[in-house]
Length: 196
Ligand SMILES: [Zn+2]
Image 1: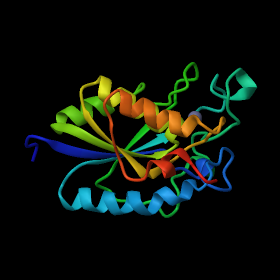
Image 2: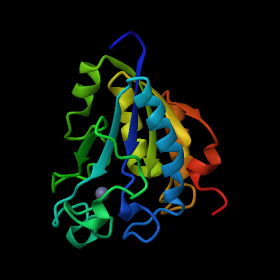
Image 3: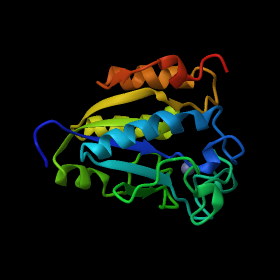
Image 4: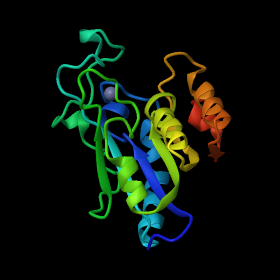
């Protein structure tokens, strides 16, 4: 079924630790679940592939503040915080991509150290739709890598939310994605976390 212009959906890191109550909670992060589920069902109904990335860190990694990185401990392999949000669609046709496994790297992008690009090419995918958590880190880096690797990208602004360590980070990430060729679809104020 790999005709020209085939699309895939990439759902980035919709995991407990990035949702309210998690150790690295993104404000309103849970709001991405409903629009992403809707899209995932549409893609699967059309036999288009759906990928779910997950942060899947070892206990000790330079990504965590305790070992010289930026972040509190989150999404450690096998923990409840690393599980997908309970309401996120769970369908056997979806492919899970684990990232952030390398203790020497941040692993923000779904393409970093994974076989995602190869799987997309094997399926004949030319365009990826990307949403999830968080706008200013893993979504942004996944979008930038997808473009660099030659895929067309639609960034799903209604279905992403930012960390906003600095209040402008989400908005800057949107501008950065647009500047390198991503098409921003939906309400980019949501993607930037405006009004929170
Ligand atoms: Zn992480």
